[in-house]
Length: 585
Image 1: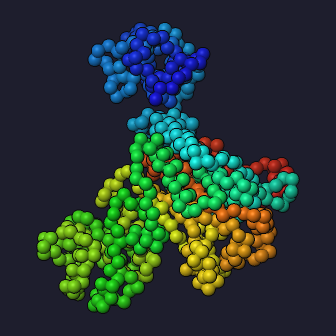
Image 2: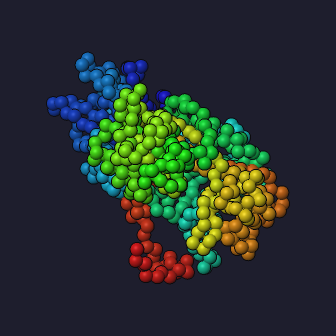
């Protein structure tokens, strides 16, 4: 797409010149990407801006070096025959420079910024402003901007209004550690930086805004990894008088439009599966559906088995690995070791050998397998000659989880999946277990409405209660979560009680929310989409650091600025803070 530009320093962008511009006088500005001298009075400068590179012909270089910032003026002309560069969009033209001005000089760079050079990540983050000049980073951040624009446009087309919520907020029990901000004016008291705008957007629903959205900055003081930073950005939405299906429709529309515009590809509408089905069939609540390879339940088949490792186990699960029968013994042993590393007591393998008409299983337990068991394994796993069947027996939850992790790791290797497959995972459990003090732990957050059919189980069988919560998953990554919210004070108090939050504590921490529910709260629900993860997937990146302008390292450091840093004694005194000796980690 051609972008019109006209300033006193330039008339065009470098990367957008082409044969239609031949004969035009242009003015360009950018960085010196490369220099080449041909004799005493002829030189070439590759001038770069964010749109690309164009070759400029000058009468001698003089005192010009790489990464100098120049303004040049001249006439666009066709490159001499045989000198074209079809690797560049501008490779058939050049600019014959008649005026050149050095706008800024540059010291030799501490790292190369061309696409061919691999640079240590610590060096990239220390000199992030140089790293941002790279084509990769320019593309990633501009892709991010395009995604944000598409999301905003889609939300507004559905009648959502953008409202900014506070960054200085009150503590909330959303499961993650919060960043505390001391109050100078009220010594001893603290704000927190929001984990999400959850309560604020619910209050907006009570306030009658009906449909809210925000590209929201959120902060959590959690350990960092490839898909997690202290600071993150989400598309945050909330809607009154909306069902799950209506929330799903709006969000699906937004991500599909953004995907089509960002990567120029139309993808299938998200399918929907229950949390129970996801765990049973894929061993995870964030399945990668770009390949099949489901978990297969063999429990009934081996209910009366004589195979010791399968006998009297709560569950027997398997996955079929295409072509795995040809693996070396060392590779199969590595698979067994990986299962043990993930928490299994072992892994039983079976090779499907022979012809389709006379297939059999070759395994360390072949002699103990009955004919009906062997035939049942082949039929249920749909194995073909040359496949390897991996079997884990034990407790249901851990068996699903371990096989699910193996499925994810091996699926990427065996299928080299491409494209984008969205899936809604619904009907999550309301609670995921108990904490050390015997209190229930919410699977999402404590403002999620229980399934109406399960309300009577809140006291008698809370772990069986389903919530009206849902996740959107893309290619094995959780893009975001949402739920229908509790809008009734009595139900919210029952959930607080189940979580061990007393009436007094609930009033102290959430009195403003509970009070709001007394004045006519509409039924409402919402969703939060992780933009960092979304853009990383669309950009083909493994880490969200590659789609964030100024990320932190895995230790939480900003190598460029040196943050975090100590505050001066004067600042600490103003905040009424005294420091204890640092704890040993």
